[in-house]
Length: 414
Image (cartoon, rainbow, N blue to C red; front, side, top):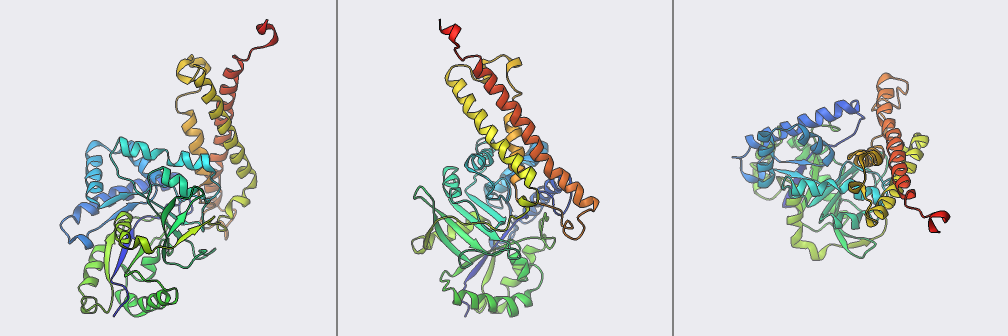
């Protein structure tokens, strides 16, 4: 008999802003993936619930871009599927690095309010892939944003997880509050095990190895979550074959007899709802989850420094604008000629967050550093740092100039 009763399979794209394709191409592909996911989820509405197609929109930036162009009919279909639990929206802007400081994390989570209030999406979970760890205060920022479940899918090629995996635990933040966290396998772990492609490999090779691992680390829950992707692996579309594979697997006699665990296509929320039954048994860990995978930022040290300085300027601009607002001279109370455009602040912060996102370099950048593909992707990446510089200089200048108009000099004091 298997020690596992059921494996929850969470299907999603792994969002790389670049790497597989030039960045503008990535955004259009991501748009198509959402369209395809809507079609597949509707096609599977009559399937048995555990075997019905599900898709997790793991990062919000592709969704925000899709919403700019989606017509009312497509949006209504997406919302209906989200309400039914066949599509889930996760909270992170992208797969983020610890280059984000607290202000940047807050900015990256700011779209959640709009997605909830304007579109009615219920966003309760967050996911991060590839990167080995995150700054400790992320716990409190996610809790502040209404997130109650977070999963990490650490890249096994360039680093490792600090704790045994798989493991569900409570990550205690600096505030003392805890966030339910899952230290899972790499984001394509399900496909690597054979889910969606090779039932015999899953049954005869991977599940015995998995059971041995779970025994070794004293994993006790009868359920497990694995994330899975399309065979393309990075910037990948929905995998249409998954429902049929799960249905055939669950129909096997050795699954019915309990010798092998059943499979269940699930969303992160469904996983965390299942974990709730053993919440009291989850261990708690306190401290930083240090990253050492994101070495890309040091390969572009000049631009990384520019982005960090731009972020400092934006914090200064925000502080001065707050003071001006308290004085009755906020942006809405100033003449248009004495204030920046209405979207400048959002664009500046978005440039910083996109530069600090985890993708550095094309998939051929190591083998072909001078190729057109490598150079093209680098220029798209570097543009974020320089755009942040330009916009942050503008915003700080506008704020300090307006503040200076209100400084009382010696002559004015008389």
